[in-house]
Image 1 (cartoon, helix red, strand yellow):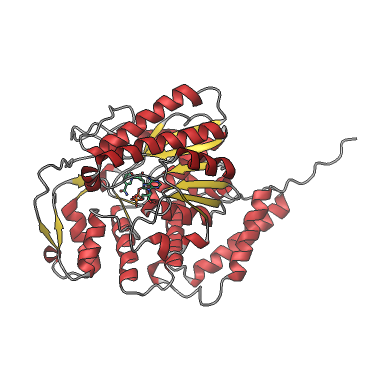
Image 2 (spheres, helix red, strand yellow):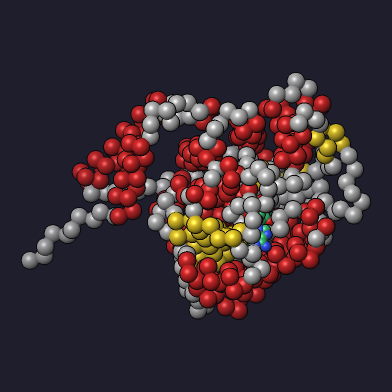
Length: 435
Ligand SMILES: NC(=O)c1ccc[n+]([C@@H]2O[C@H](COP(=O)([O-])OP(=O)(O)OC[C@H]3O[C@@H](n4cnc5c(N)ncnc54)[C@H](O)[C@@H]3O)[C@@H](O)[C@H]2O)c1
């Protein structure tokens, strides 16, 4: 006689419920005080609790689990390496992965700015940090070999266009050889998934009005752009030579651009320049007010990178591919519009007082128009952006306002609350990864 099947209790589901319970019980009354616009209202908190209890009941009565959201299923309990984790995007990515339940291992040569989100959020106390130059192959191989990660996100780069004019050799060596070294380390690892972060600037930008597609020619007239195009070529060569058929590793590249959001202090970035100038009570100098950019909140490409890694974990479809992650075309805005909107949010009565226009250095080549076509990410990964331009401006200005006014003593909590807000908007707008 056949014995009745064991009830299936997927451990990820149980872990999720336990984590939610722990989180709820450890949340003090103080933590539940409203934090700006991002706080959960008492009714939402009550709703969340009821929803979790319904999920538990659902499982007990029907034996059908209501699974936690996709990213939690993919990253909870996994070991994840993030290179360049002390920078702007890397710090946000570590905080998000940490919230998802991953064991995060950071690799960076230094903390590149002062202040930094990395220090303000005290990330070093949350993750395993290695101070390594990605140009040092033996050390990189050793950390990745010892760590045995399930996933690697390669973000380490010399990421500043103006610095690439001052230090072209270093820009190429970090951005190209750093990428080659990560690929070498994964070749030795023989397992896991890797997302290599390049840039929208990797394309040969001829300033046409259409969005670039992943199969458009690579290029780059300035050093930074060229180094990112070259990193893409290195990736392709490695894929066809070593990873395509036999390796246990699955890899892809992510191309995004013009990311904004709280916690960035890298030089010569428009939002950072605004905040620094306005913080000191002066107008910000801008070079190309009419240049149009695909502005997006930092969490948007990060959700793309996480979706890409999840897809690589699941099947072969994205293996060896490149994906654009950008806003909808209707969300592109000229620099001047972004400045005016940020200035209003910052509190300028007359936003025209917030900036002055200067000439760019003569040797600089800066594209005035750059758009991405993200149809492939939608088709293959079901990824699409979540936020509207207005959300991006609001979240960015709220983050810096709170920091500037010293209102938020715990930057980590505030940043976490923006991640939660983003997840919740994504769920409401039906993004696959959020459910
Ligand atoms: N911020 C943007 O708007 C944007 C746009 C397109 C692409 N990107 C790409 O996204 C990635 C992250 O960008 P970001 O804005 O966080 O950059 P960032 O400058 O804030 O951070 C760069 C990170 O790389 C590390 N790093 C630099 N050189 C290194 C080396 N030799 N060895 C080890 N670590 C090194 C830094 O310490 C830091 O942790 C980069 O690859 C960048 O090119 C960023």
